[in-house]
Amino acid sequence: MGQLIRLAFCAIALALTGTAMAADSTIISPAGRKAMAPELAISGDGGINVIWMERTPEGEKIAAAGAASKEGHTHLAETDLWFLRSTDGGKTYGTPVRVNATPGAVWGFPVSKPRLSATPDGTLHIFYPGNSIDKKNGKPIVLPMYTRSTDGGRSFSAPVVLGTVADSDNSDIVHGGLANAECFGTMTTDDKGGVYTYWVDTRDMGKDSPNGKLFSAVSYDNGKTFGRDFEVFPADVCPCCQATAAVYDGRIYLGSRQVSAEGNRDSTVAISSDRGKSFQPRARWGGAHWKIEACPLKPTSIVVDGNHVYAAAYDGGADPQGAALSRSLDGGKTFEPAVALQPGAAVSDAPVLAMIDGKLVAVWHTKLAGERRVFLGLSRDQGKSFSAPVELGAGMYPVVANRAGGLQLAWQQGDTIVTRFIAGNDALLR
Image (cartoon, rainbow, N blue to C red; front, side, top):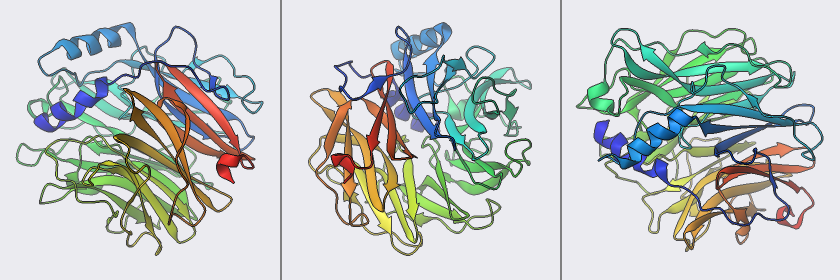
């Protein structure tokens, strides 16, 4: 994993130059701070819940030292996780609350960020990669952590470690100061008390096979307790591509990148019909095979509508490369060839998906004239075709969530977090 991660993390240091904000967007992060990589969830009462990361002063030093090093990056990180909530439809937001009690406890990058979910009873669930120390050797490790709030985000429970500390010391493979890493994770919840967490794990990594395994820990009592972590996929998972997950009609849809024997790193979708206990064989999405001797740092967004399963990802094997959508009409068993979301764009990436009133919405960022800008595309024919992309404003790493009456979006613009609501009757979504 050494060379793979060394090459992969070069992308982490990319920064966006600030520009004017669209008139219908709102900056919600405090001025003078360096916020990044938002996540978004809508509560049953309509509350808008947002989290983001900020490097601590020590984290800034670590990042600067890594950028100045021969490798040009570091695998170490110290960040804080912040939570913010609106109860009036986004007109106003409360005071940001730091989720982690210990400063710098979150190991975070935009490509391995915390996850947020809200369940019908109002509980807020947060899953994040946390900094820790392996007591056997004194070296830094990253562990999957979980916390929740039952009071609308005013306070959060003590973090629970969901992953087993590895017996191995893989610092000669992982490099960058880490003995092992359990990160690049995701989480989803259902309306029956299920909290499903997944992460990429290096505990069984070897020099001859520098790939990760996918592990899981599940709660069936709304996050009060979790079972022991267990292996979901063997050591053929791209070690630096964040997993994704969605629940629909009692099934879990899990997105990840699989490393083939030929060295391809292709997006896949796997389905569980028994509440996360087991998964059907992974189905490869319809993008071109992508053979790359590095971690691409690319997740696979999933949204489901009946028997239609949509997967969006960076199609690295295509010419040109870019954000693309592949759809399945048979419940996720097979996927059609991927279609570019913004044909002709030099750099398009980080697509996310949502369904509204039977229409499929894709949001992504594209690099134009040296900066990244957020775009939206709409499909009225179940993903067969998309409207011409519409620019929403400067930014990157967009997220989207369904909200009564429309869609709530958030993204990173420079060092700030921006939100925007698009009503269902807006021309963008008609």
